[in-house]
Length: 148
Image (tube, rainbow, N blue to C red; front, side, top):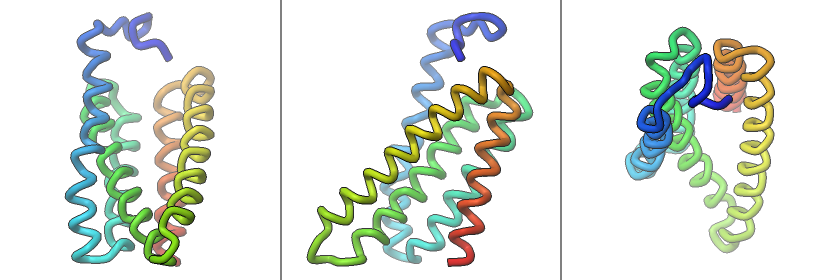
């Protein structure tokens, strides 16, 4: 989806806000790490997924809130990622590089597949359906983590 072309016709400044929204995830990592150390990874993963899921649903309703929703979405997913990585590294403290490499491989392959799906979905289904698809995927991850 090209934001500078119709139907959006966003300015370069407004498109830049979308990139800036990604910084929320970076800022969330420190707090998520501290919270993970205090309360455990499971709680942080569930909270991060819940926050990201709500942001995905809300972003599907109105484009005017999309930048804020993307910032919240990113923060939630980064929080969950930090907690998940903590869990993976605790599997075998003697081999953190091996486990982190496997985790990051799965993380980036999943991210690549999600991005590819998102691009196709946005073009063929529109933004609301794409946002709801993200919310459904996050809900599935939430329920899986809740049961494990």
